Each structure stands twice: as C-alpha cells, then as structure tokens.
Image (cartoon, rainbow, N blue to C red; front, side, top):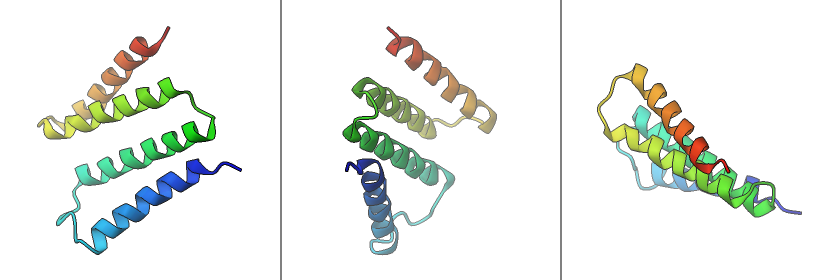
Length: 100
C-alpha cells in the first residue's frame, strides 16, 4: 500500500522540528518563516500524492512553481492587502500557462 502522501510531510515536519529545537534555527519565528513552512508541507504532500499515483507530474510542477513564485513575494516589501492579490495573479498566470 502506498503511503507517500503521509510519509513525506511527516519527514518534512520532523526535519523542521529538528532544526527548530536541536539547532535553534530560526532564531526568531516570523510570519514569513511560518508561511514558508506551510508551503513546504503542501509541496511535500503533493509530491507524496504524485509518488502514490494520484497526481500528474505537471500538477506537481505547477504547484511547485506557484509556491516558489509566491514565497518569492516575501522578499519584496509590499503591503499586506496586496500580498493576496499578487498570489492570485501568479496563480492565474500559471493556470493559463499549464492549460492545454
């Protein structure tokens, strides 16, 4: 029985736990740091579903590309109300790009 969709996010979570409590990284848990971790867990769950055979490779690539572009917004100094709008614009472009 395939269980990669559960194993990969748990491994990622334990890696975060190890980094946070053993290596004391990051020094300060900010909102950006927490969203980066949520994005990583979502991608690991999607990758696990791909290994289980429930998700196509192009969907994994699309979600990974969206997460990279969305997480790239954290380095840009923008106001909070525009953050969601830019995420939706990135998602729209990716949907139009990946649609056949």
